[in-house]
Structures are given as structure tokens and as C-alpha cells.
Length: 195
Image (cartoon, rainbow, N blue to C red; front, side, top):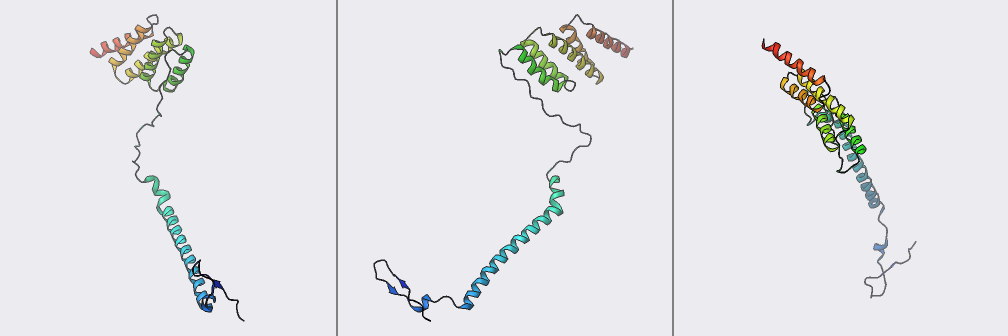
């Protein structure tokens, strides 16, 4: 059975000519089978490489990665170290702000440090008292903060630091007698230690 001739132009300006019969004939069966087999082998080879890499990655994760990765480049935790607290952002109150807004902002931040960092509490209450003097809540809380920091310093053995805080409390609100009582206790303790 003969195939119809195929017309192919060699250049656009030349007339069409008949292509030779060999050029028109499809590939022979063994050549075609070999080409299909080579393409299939490339696909299978790529799939095997991907599977091998995935298996190695999985084995690495299971053997060392899942248990070892958290340990690489990490300093050994100290057993006796106390837990670290997150930092407390200082209050940000613009100049000229309303007093109720400023008090709320300062108290919100002070509550985070209350009982944990007395010098910070004192510093922020002193700032608030300097900006808005005469607030009764600030008067009460600053006095208590002076006393509590003095008590902590006293318990740590820093008698001079405790005396300084008690004297600050006595100067800040001389009408209360708690700071004077604590100063008297310190004087009695100092006199008893000298004997």
C-alpha cells in the first residue's frame, strides 16, 4: 500500500517538492521500542532516586533528627537557675495626658512587677507621683513599696539599704508610724549586734 506523497518546502520562496520516501517512513519497530524503553528507564530511574533520597531523609530524621535536633547548638540548661521572667515594658504616657489615663497605664505595668521587683515599682510610682502629685492611691502604694523593699533588703542582710528605704518611707509620709517602727527595730538590732 502506498502512502500519499508529502510536500515539503525547502525555503519559503522555492516551490514545493516531494520528500523522499525514506524521510516520510515512520521509525522501524525496534528503534521505536528502544526509544520507549529508554524513556521508561529514565522515569523509573528518577523515581528510584527520589525514593532513595526520601528514605535517607526519613532514616536521618528518625535516627538522629527528631531526637538530636533540639540538642544541637543549645547550651545545657542550668539546674539551679531560677526561671526567667519576661521583660516588663515601661509605661508610655505622653506629656499632658489625662491623670486617670496615666494612672491606669502606670498601674497596669506596676501590677506586673508588684511583689517581684520592688525597685522598679518604686521608680514607676515616683515617676507617676512627680507627674501627678497628690494622688491618694500613689501615696499609699509608694509608701508600701518603700516598706516592702526595705523588708526584702533587711532579710537579705543589707541593713544600710533597708535603713535607706525606711527613711524614704518616713520622709514620704511622716504621719504613718510603720516606717519609724521598722527604723527602731533596725536600731535595736544594730545595738544588740554591737554588744
